[in-house]
Length: 248
Image (cartoon, rainbow, N blue to C red; front, side):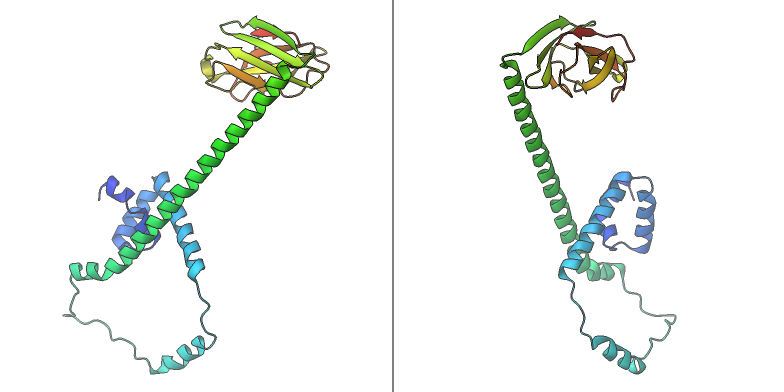
């Protein structure tokens, strides 16, 4: 069985519709295919939830009737040589209803997965839009504040930045343009300079050469803002010389 064919059997495996040999081969495939293993787990969870949704509690007297009937049920004799073997084609036809049910369940699970992912993506996009609108409103208020100050400078290595601060509003923004990508996956990090100490104030979003960053914390007590290049994720203290120093 090819790898491509194996990738299509996640639904049948999750529902136990594979033969012993097919199931064993697919189980070995799961050990080296993280995507199929994840899909099988999700399909099994979906099947379990669907089963719970239609589960019924058996009548209390059912167990009593079954136990009472056991002495009258004859055990099947062992198979003898010459026993008729059901042809593979007939066995396959007998399994068709189960495979069809499995296909329907898999289709429902996949469709449900796509729907959940679509809702998740839409919610994330709405959240991004809300954050962007909120930031735009704060920056607009900041730039029109009566006590707003503006300091602009060029950064070493390219690009320029402007620090807009309002102590009355307790907010500071860094407006940047033309920042080149940093080598070694390093990131631009902003700092408040307070009493000779550099305090982390935020990271410029990776991959964006122009934009606006609202600094963490307000400008009260700060005598400047610095920009440095730091390792991925930023640093708790500067590890390189400033690319720019601006007033507030």
